Amino acid sequence: MRVVIMGCGRTGSTLASRLDGDGDEVAIIDLDEAMRRRLPAGFHGRFVTGSGVTPAVLEAAGIAEAEAFVALTASDGANIVAARSAREVYRVPRVIARTYDPVRAPVYSELGIAAIGVVQTTVNRVVHVLRHVTLEPHQTFGNGDTMLVRSAIPDYLAGRRAAEFAVPGEIAVVELTRSGHSRIPDASSVLAAGDELSFIVAAGSLGRLRSFLDGRWS
Amino acid sequence: MRVLVVGDTEVAVQVALGLRRIGAEVTVVDADGRRAGGLGAAGPPVVVGDPLVPSVLERAGALRADVVACCAATDEENLVVSLLAKRRFGVRRVIASVNEPANQSLFDDRWGVDQMVSPASALIALISREEPGAGQPPAAR
Image (cartoon, rainbow over all chains, first blue to last red; front, side, top):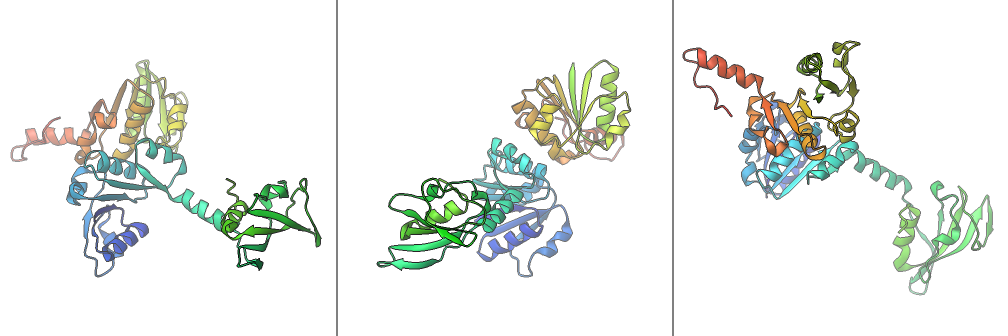
């Protein structure tokens, strides 16, 4: 695949090196000639000095024949302009741009540019990891068709009813431990921060229970 | 006439002051507010904010503006603001200043620009026309 990358910073140079290693034909653009040093010694691709905003620079990088264009500079404005030119003037089939500022993201989608919001993506990933709950079965039944699992309740689920976890035929809430005391919850039991719950879960529904605990109620 | 002047450049300041002097209702959008001081206490109102964010332009009155003048320090800002002004806010007349002559070909209706001004190109054309041996001026657009 012929790929033009704009921005030879950490992400751009790493992506260029990776695609080059995969056998793709890479051209990378940067304003600063010195950024060339970020590319690995055996890099087969081309380095073009200039701004990807400037049509002549995009053309020198081979934009007219490119199958993909990736805009990764620190300037959202430059990324937007270059990505839109790549898409609308040079008809590059795949155009991806990075955006730093989440409030600018709607501008990209309005212009039909696939934008990856690095801040938003990182925040989402961190929140996911923070909230992600590992579920280890304490006991399995039959051929592992159902199992008993226990999990501490994430704080943000406090105030919800234990019965909300129940899915007929998939998930049953069978026990609640609060401050060292265990009891069997009923339909009206409300969760508090620090509670632990025991569930009987069908093997195929473990992922569903995990997403409930991760905050993705569907 | 309501004019929105976008940019944190000396040109933006002078355009804002000059238009105000001839009676236009001017608002300036300045990304970091540094230039606002140059407008003086009696100067036009300044909206401090990122002009690439539609809500900032809206706060500055883009929906009511007759003219948007893009005088930012980079061509990418001028192009994105021009496009937002034309497409999103339906501004009748969008005028943009070109910083780099190599980007001049971008400044047309594809980016929502009705008219453009390219000081560097104009200077180059002037000088090359009057100095023997300076070569041909770039093709006028």
